[in-house]
Image (tube, rainbow, N blue to C red; front, side):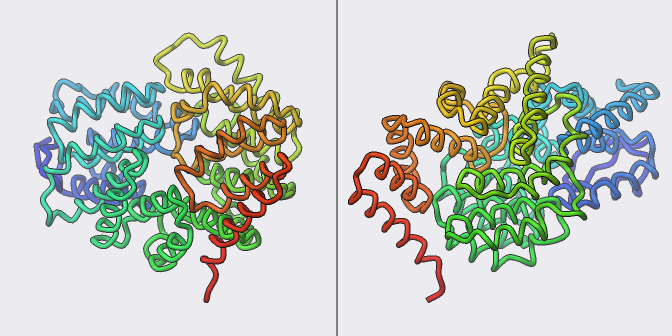
Length: 472
């Protein structure tokens, strides 16, 4: 073994150049969300089976997919490696990575994220630590950390570093989740201008425009950068989901379904949780507006079955419940809720982040969705109101969690809780007055109150906004 510097100048214990170069390719693949990251890591470990950074990077991949089977395999692999390795011979940075990987694979997302944050204070050019830590902040819904973990490292990256742009894409997403939309847009646009294959940067632009109701610009931006995001990366499905959200705001229902069938979920889909939740989130928004997509729901619900055997990530559980309800599988939705309630009642390891997520947010949301599907709208409101300001605790983005907020709005309207509906819609319009959805819901509220003129005015505003999306 010798100590060599990786592509970003970090001292690394490795057998030779071949393994280190493959590792550097893997980090570049990870930053670009390329599937080749797994192949690159395999090459690194084939060249040097005892390569610590290759082993921990492979462990991280087992966490980032939010799939329990992947995590179990990664846990076993890391355990085998550690049984034949003296960790005291590793460099302090490498030992910190091992500790972070162990924590994450044990289910302690918060603890693992903290280890990575402390590591990057001393090693701000550790791109693997930054990328993985950023994703953990996303999984735990920590907007401030999502922003400041990367922000704290940026000055260590020179302007001419080829990977600085990818850090800017990450930083832009943290800025957006923190509500700093103007700054986020500037940073994200710069990131993608520097590297058109920065799909996380494209994703940050999509989020920033979504949160401001700028669906016309969003469609134009994604169309204009199609070559950089539509194929060859793990985020293509998610960015197509954003495209569909823009279409729904413009009043187009048919095109999102075409995209759903072609990209989001079909017979050739890999059925990975991170893509299936996008499919469920799109169909649920349509369900709230009365669109019956039972056939699509049924196929999606079947795909969730194998992933719900054990509790792993409450955010995924929510989307599985949506799918069961959309498919008319009420008994299965209720069984999943009961299973997670038993998990919360019986589990004792409070270091497992998902236990807290499920107890505080996952279960109330799942119960609310079941109540909504059963027409018990007052119960939906009762479950969601106490947690509506803490939904971030089970991960995802503002845009993703908006499916839950819209469910609350719809339940308030359908249960006749007009004062609550008025306040919820007032909040939404104050933040995003460019959303046709918000104005249409305002019109629906006025209809229920018998205020025909006000309802007509709100619908007119929605129509004006939607006309702006049509070709002249």
